[in-house]
Image 1 (tube, rainbow, N blue to C red):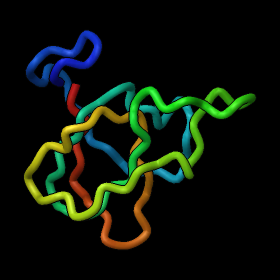
Image 2: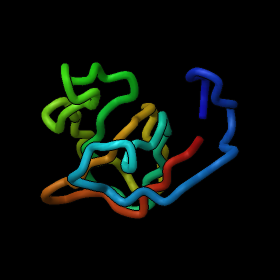
Image 3: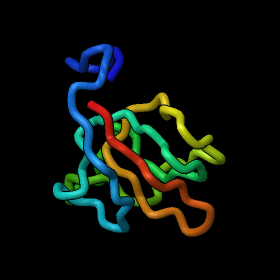
Length: 97
């Protein structure tokens, strides 16, 4: 969504996001914007984050916490991973492409 890479200005695909404690190819969202249904904190790894040498993947301490994201809004960043937030985590998250 928006002007990132080859994404159009509108959503053409969407998928429900299940925050995970795992960072691997199966949990990679592949550069998605996020819609937040029920507000709270979102812990995410921004698209393009430099991978750790050897693993080819980013690590959890490279994540950014977006505090108090309101219900019913788009988070205006492009992310590859959404991680589990310990307390006060947002829910009903949708990846938008």
